[in-house]
Figure 1 (cartoon, rainbow, N blue to C red):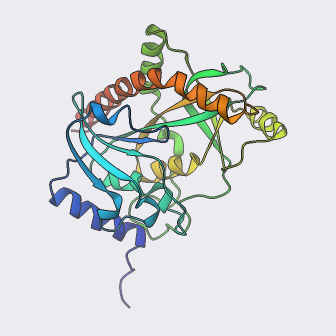
Figure 2 (figure 1 turned 90 degrees about the vertical axis):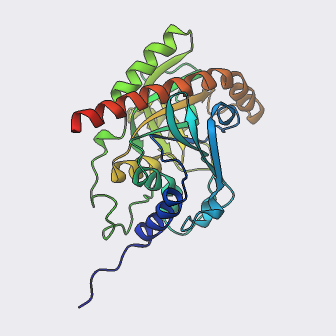
Length: 282
């Protein structure tokens, strides 16, 4: 009998990894996957290299309209891309950059996303500010881990206990408050999109222990648990769930300068923690 066939995900990651590293595309310490946009952060990178995912061998079509940048943010080597994939039939396609970054050397990831505070949460979040995710509820109804039993990129039943970097979160929270930024920590309900929650759903999620909700985030956490990538999530709280779209956009614009301040600080903290972990493993 022949050996077990390589999983499609593993084959695609291997192909992309070989192209990027053999081609001199800088390896990352930290992956930045930003659903809030990269326009304020990308100009801060030095020694930047950039590739369309469409040029990367093995990349899912879901990411073909997005680019991957490599460079230094301060003293840290990062990969940066906007979290804007399209639909794809493969359940793992949504989270594909997580596995790629991990296999290419990343030890940490920074996620940014817009979120809705839950009015019935205890304690309630501020309606506009930043939430650092300390835990999550996976309520999306699907997972990128489907059919990954033959994958060699992670365990069949990954432990989610290491997904959120507590030390990095606590340090960033301290620095944010010292800078006067409205920042707190809490539990995120990961819900499917693109529809916003009903008031009953918001009450239910708060009753379950969540403080805010965000769309299409849980699949990234499952991929990080599988790959062994630890993370820090900065959620921009954009007002009540029943707010008009123009109000949500205005809130995002007001929070943009604070987010642009938090992201480089978070990267510095994550990289430091990753280097400390590496030293301890020697």
